[in-house]
Amino acid sequence: MMRKLILAVATLVASMSFAFAQVDVNKADAAALDGIKGIGPAKTKAILDERKKGEFKDWADLEQRVKGIGGKNAAKLSAAGLVVNGKAMEGAPAVASPASKTSKATKADKAGHAPSSGQ
Image (tube, rainbow, N blue to C red; front, side, top):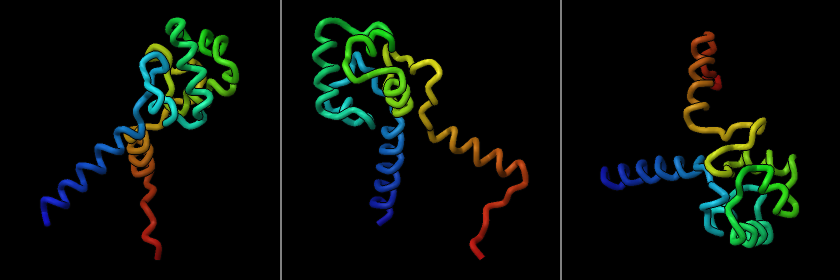
């Protein structure tokens, strides 16, 4: 019973870390690109077709070469975890990570806000 519990906890922790992983447009396969919110099969195919011609240099290059990815869409994709050469789009919201959620909870605790007990 204890082994099953430990395995379940380990699996949960591992899956949480994958949920916040960044996907580099120059290295990702079709499945990884499809996993980004806002990218479907058609956009994945367009990205992979353009990538065959050469890697994307930066976000501007991606926007120019892939139809349907403009400034607003690129910002959303960056916020969802897509990166170009390891870099998120400048000015786009950062990808939420477990550490940032923890720090927000810690700040609330330090401010004297106690979690409600529901009573």
